[in-house]
Image (cartoon, rainbow, N blue to C red; front, side, top):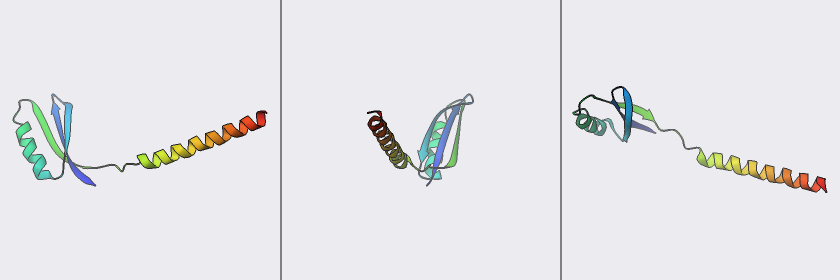
Length: 79
């Protein structure tokens, strides 16, 4: 999903950013911010990264099960 990112910089250092649904709303906000002295503001297109956290949780759960099984086997073999 694409969105618009407004990046604000003061003296060359990025001090903030905000996400907008469209370029018009970003440009309206930009016009208010650039009224401040020594502030640079850019509106740029960006792509939201896919959230893979659920997939990662599944991988970690499988890993924990494998560790549990290995520990159980090791415990059985130690007896």
